[in-house]
Image (cartoon, rainbow, N blue to C red; front, side, top):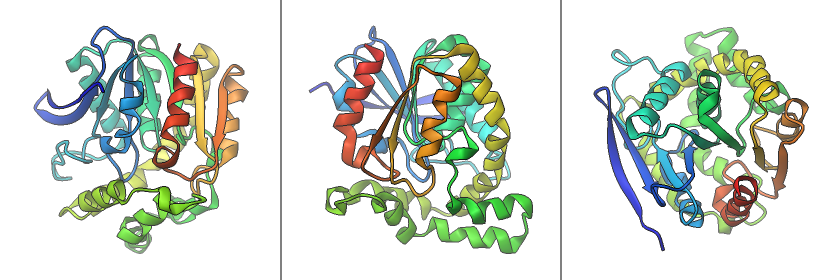
Amino acid sequence: MIPTRYRTADVDGFKVFYREAGPANAPRLLLLHGFPSAGHMFRDLIPLLADKFHIVAPDLPGFGQSDMPPRETFSYTFDNIARMIERFTEVIGFDRFAVYVFDYGAPTGFRLALRHPERITAIISQNGNAYEDGLSEGWGPIKAYWQDPSPANRDALRAFLTPETTRWQYTHGVPDPTMVSPDGQNLDNCYLARPGADEIQLDLFGDYKSNVALYPAFQNYFRTHQPPFLAAWGKNDPFFIPPGAEAFKRDNPKAVVRFFDTGHFALETHASEIAQSIRDLLT
């Protein structure tokens, strides 16, 4: 068993916590988590790949054990999160790497690819969307907030931040919910309960519209550069639906699309299958 190490990087005065495993001279793989989680969502995947890859999984700014500065001193937008992760890769010496993107990790990782296509060796998108085809009707309340950022529409989104909703995100669409460990979801809820975390997450719900606005640019990147690409999708995801996975093939015909009979947090039930799919793509 190759050990996972738990480190902190100083990124221009900002603390980024990250997990690291695998040989330093192996091909590099950056893992980017989503809402409302952190790098711990990769706890089952990392040991399955660490023999062949140098893996790094940071907690995004405001998530997990990375710094969560107040909104008055740090603007919680996806542009700022992507810039921080870009600098993080430079600080730790990740100059060329494959990137695994999930949920919020997708608009973060795809921004990295837009800015530095020469650094990206491959992309694994696990329920990480880049097409309007992939947005379910469940986005209705968030879209309403984009169109009218009123206090009432903002407050309506607080339902997404409850412990019950987190548990639902983990178990919805999973044929056997007893396969889903409570560990990840309970840790997510612990982080969400921190003072000020709710307002940060509401800011990011509002800024998600910036990601949709960038979809054409992301798609142009896929067409122009056509990186080795795997869409590994929990087919029962209530937020990012299967047409979003199939859409990658429109712009990158060589993209591999694999569906798994599970929900949004596919690694909770299918880490081994997804790890094998990554091995197949990258080796």
